[in-house]
Image (cartoon, rainbow, N blue to C red; front, side, top):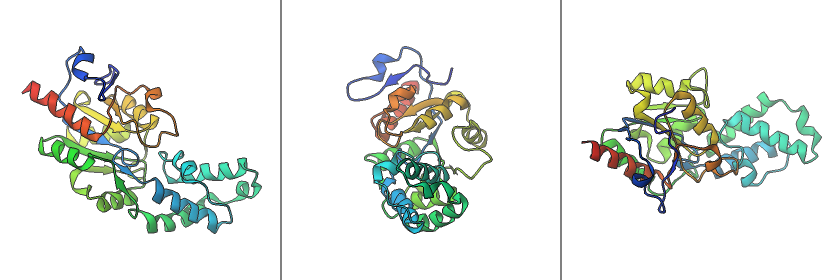
Length: 254
């Protein structure tokens, strides 16, 4: 059973103090997903993808269609968009070279990364509170590391994270347990005192495999599906509520 494995929804209607009977661990490490959890990057990703589609002679896709594909990394996103084109009756997309398409995409994404990144409400203040309380923070994303760093820099978040693990940083990426295990080992934190916060089923599965608490936010890019269907240990309305919870538990244990 992962840390904090009793499922709880933490929102304005539910007080976690009355719904969790088991003792709660003090969290020493929280790993955060990036896109859809800390920062809304859907529009800039969609713009890069659509510029790529236009360049290879395919029609642009609505932002919502692109958003549903965010989470597995940019290569899988473009693969999904090509599949959408095929499903729409454009047979040309079946014969295109994905490697060549990715070279074009990376050029466009270089131009759009950080240009329309929007912090979710309360995110910055929550990270300040967690950092100042001594909680170690890491960013674990499937976005390529160089792009993740640019988003963090553009939004003023780069100074908060002890580690930034991108989809190309290690031999594996989410949902493989190795990405969180790397953070646990590097920062010398046991599984029982760590949680991963994300917006998708990929994040929940990653946390489960790594044996840490699987926490989620209800907004973001979970393929259009409610995050509750992935059964995280807890759903928080925002990162500020995560900070409230972590610091409340720490205060009671002091």
